[in-house]
Length: 239
Image (cartoon, rainbow, N blue to C red; front, side, top):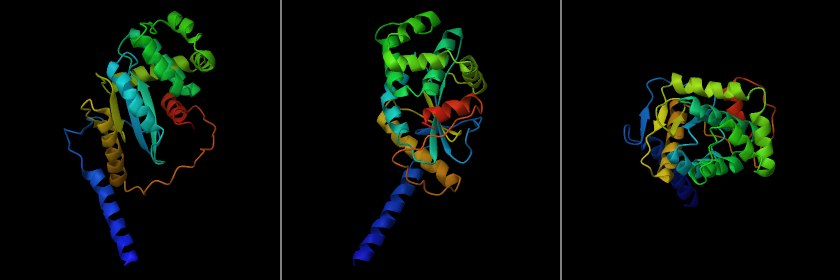
């Protein structure tokens, strides 16, 4: 009897996982991109966010999304891209690239959003940014070193090219598998449930196996410059 109960429970669990993957409404929960965005890592599922530090919705989403991306399945990874619509966004994209490259996202993003929205610090201005970041302690020094690195300008320019190529006209946009965009209702906790379902959907479509359990302490690996996006994604995921 116990074995029967275990098998029955397992079957129910598996059917629940399938329901999670299938229980999505096209046009209500998500949309399909007209132009697929190539992933940086083909054998994993990419979670890409187009965002802006000047976007209040991005600020509000940050807490939910930052918690989620720290606990993505082992077969998924996060890739942040700051939009560049005009010259006013250029320095913000460079800051975003420096955040990813320095691994300071946990400390930096809340402070950056707060500086812009709560303290009216104009971080679009490179001089203002450098003055402000020098008051932020140890993580600020790490971020500034990355900002001053030889590759930082090119990383910002790559974000501008992506913004234009994929016609990104609003933020935030969270895209899964280079194909599906979450259609947010403004309920960010609910959006994270949709994110889980879209990851499962992509996994099913690609016939990928269930993800392995993540190690408790990921082993550090060297990152080579494979192009701006690859570097940013690797850094953002602690690789």
